[in-house]
Length: 139
Image (tube, rainbow, N blue to C red; front, side):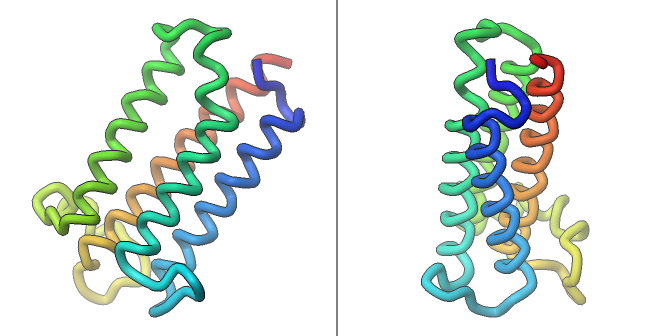
């Protein structure tokens, strides 16, 4: 079990915070150094977020069992995250339209990629909060 403030938890948390930081910058700026904008930023947030989940999240499944409620919840959120990534990359607006109005700082309806970055950041944050709860419970 990952415990609060152990190396695995801290590394996973650092990656989550990095993913959320990149998502924030991608939503609020026109261009990011190295990453660029649009799909590049979405894929960067996805890759960093998945790395954080792999370090701090998936390691919980063998200890708790694959049918534990938190593991099932995390798996469902992961599948939704993949759907959002695919929708953002391919511009599937019907999937992203309901979320677009919640993207902060957008005078008009956000672009599909910006909406996908925002939605992915929210999912990453929710999964992180669940992981914090699991780590606290493991103390």
